[in-house]
Length: 305
Image (cartoon, rainbow, N blue to C red):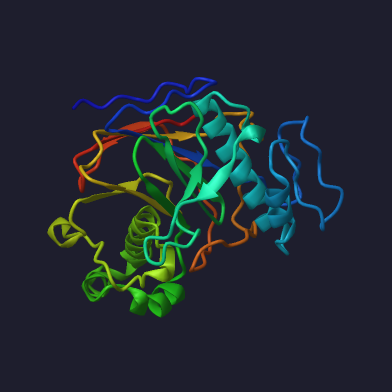
């Protein structure tokens, strides 16, 4: 399949066709900076989280529970973006969306994959949300999907966390050149978390259980796991059950959804963490390109918008 640049996204996104997946990347606002959308109230002090319109009372309480302003801003941005995007796909007001949890595949308790309640009996729309320091990812597909994004960890963190990997992954990581181990670990971990999220277990299933390394023959059967472009300081991946997708479109969320405008990053900007390991450098917006994933064969289109 030929690759092509992704066009600028429409104001109302179109549901992905069978075999297609959409991934949206969002950068949270810098701590202490107001949102670019001047209609969104600026927080009045360090103890107040941004309160963009459309979040539920439960989401606002969750945002306010974070101690660090960066964590509050990232959570509010991620969930506002999720509501805006799903509202566009489903042609419903973002504030009217209701989220539920599917049954856990391990114990059948109400803490499995998150889902959005859909009315009208149309084809199901699945989503997955992830955020790490400086970057948020929302994946949308006509089938179950998991997405993960991570800031690349420090060499010390890689060494400390490598023992949580599958033995085969540990061997691959040890064989990687020292200068490439941060990126290699990031790819391993994002594949693993994306797969566990799509599976519905999350990290209640030990990360050592499943192999998600570079040998495709050893990966879980009947699953497709793909690396995504996410800039030089982040790793990202998606996982779906069944055949590999034909086409994955990766876009940066356009201005106004939810904050608008590009937010500059500096090397000394502190960000909160919502990941099992830390990081030490902010992300960057990749330019617009289109690539074919060497590990999957699927077309991955990336837009700079």
